[in-house]
Image (cartoon, rainbow, N blue to C red; front, side, top):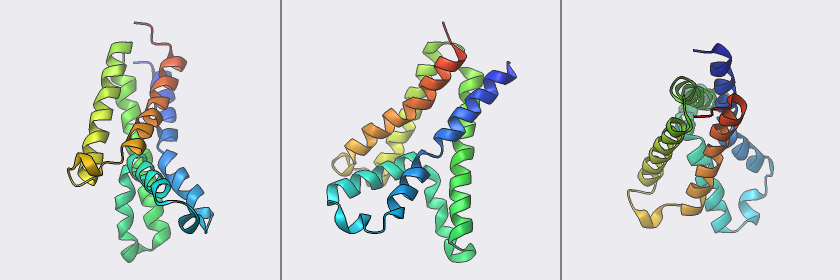
Length: 152
């Protein structure tokens, strides 16, 4: 296995692991954000952050260790999760078909996570945020495909 291919993949996917935290940090920097936007925009951003930062739930340990360490843990775990996905993509995606298959599998996992978050109800699922998340998840796959030049 080509080590350069693995490192490129892991770098791309680890960087993609910062999507959710970056969105959350950008919206929390603007202190009036929660008060000045409509509820539908708030729900969209909330859903987008949850779907792109699945390890955010680990931040509940802030009661025990403080908000800073809890945030570092949640972001670090997200980077590790995405880095592991990048490793899987680098090792298994020898063709476009396999890479598309891995992407579809990730989309199914995200749907299960979103469906669970919606209380197992299609009606409460944040569809717009879910679809936007699938586009965001496609970015690292596309970048890997373009940089490594998978041709099959």
